[in-house]
Length: 275
Ligand code: S0N
Image 1 (spheres, helix red, strand yellow):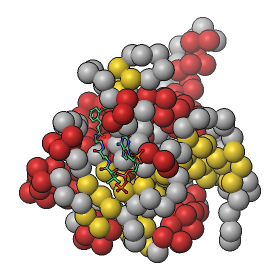
Image 2: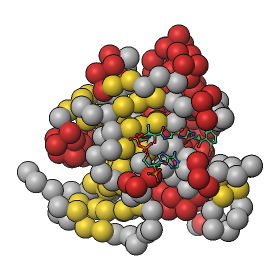
Image 3: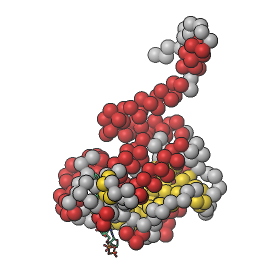
Image 4: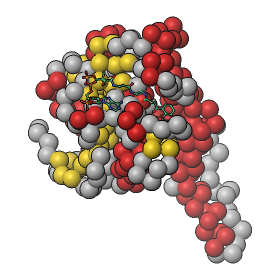
């Protein structure tokens, strides 16, 4: 089934679209192909806004994250606006706010699928690493450049990567700054599948449609649970928050609120104590 997109935002550096048929798929695209989709502060701010909107929109169940054109998913921080203390935007303030974006992608309780054509390099590589799933086109190229260009990501960019590809391989990727093709990425567990370039979006949509048939609450807990082991207290907070949400939805939790508002003692005795 072909898919049509409708624009639901007006941004300079990104596109934010929903599927026109209302199936529940959002697509967020870094739209700076002339810079191989490198991000500047305006780009990350707009990505954070679009991902936040997709998170809050109950009609959306899966988010596709991609780059405009065939040449790159994202080439990392825009080196032409890199100042002394981070990337400098129109307000002249140096920022490293891609880290906020990374965290947001981790906590959004919906699957985020990276669709990678061309380069996923540097901070752009980290952006696909933090996504739930990655579908690579046959022309995809992966790698880190930090030690070559005077930067590094000692957070998700190295630690989550290590969980995916193993300790020795992660060190190789960071220490040597080599580039890896799509098949090599698949072999090392960095991506979920590789498809011909012309099938990239269709494959992403198919995966999204399969996911949309599944229980949203189950998916929410699975994402939080898989993240929790890697994310420390922040991961536990998300998982625990999800448990609180589930509890709030129960009659047992409602009884506590109702009793308070009705100025009576709560009757929790009628609720089961499961073994
Ligand atoms: C992507 C590469 C390999 C593509 O090579 P190709 O196809 O030969 O194209 P080029 O001719 O090189 O590029 C085409 C045009 O695009 C511009 N361009 C490409 N990448 C960037 C970029 N990252 N910044 C600015 N411009 C870019 C080229 O300049 C060219 O333009 P013209 O035609 O006008 O010359 C190749 O381009 C490449 O290697 N790019 C650089 C990759 C890179 O090193 N990226 C930066 C890595 N570092 C980070 O991402 C920072 C990490 C980070 O963000 C972070 C991490 C942890 C904590 C905080 C932070 C933080 O800083 O926020």
